[in-house]
Length: 189
Image 1 (tube, rainbow, N blue to C red):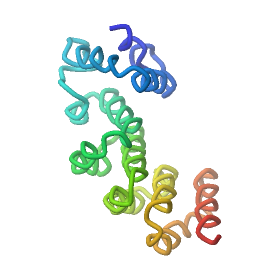
Image 2 (cartoon, rainbow, N blue to C red; image 1 turned 90 degrees about the vertical axis):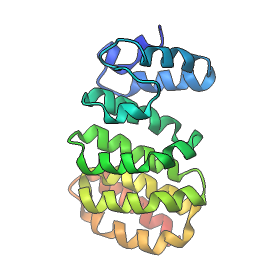
Image 3 (cartoon, helix red, strand yellow; image 1 turned 180 degrees about the vertical axis):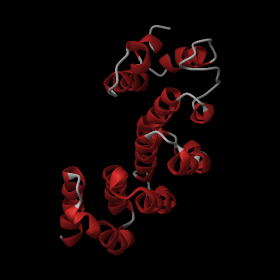
Image 4 (cartoon, one colour; image 1 turned 135 degrees about the horizontal axis):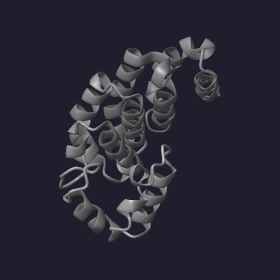
């Protein structure tokens, strides 16, 4: 169970660094995932009782939800069918979850899913637009990451993406304005 002790929640780490290191270890050695599954069905309150990651998205503990969706964001490109099946839950998190970090990682998950193929881009596009409409500048950085992936896989979307990002040129958040400029520059090439 050593791998579970390396997660952010176990180490008291409020950043994503610990979780990224765990994800990298899991990618390098998929046998580690078996240890995580054993831990998920264990009695650790922070991980709750679960057989896999998706049920954790419904957990009442914010930390559990954000770690679950954060994990999904790292592996979304490797499990597109599972992400697609979870889209209603992900959209619900976008709409209703009170945690900014849960919503950030939910959008990251959808953005990374969009990066897989033309088909996944098309499926993710509506949700990314919805997130931008619903939350505006608050989550625009994550949405723009997804839009960049869409430009790779769905060039027919570029005119609409151009119109969607235009209002953010003068965003209050400097990072949002910077990302907007990158997308516009890329589209105008």
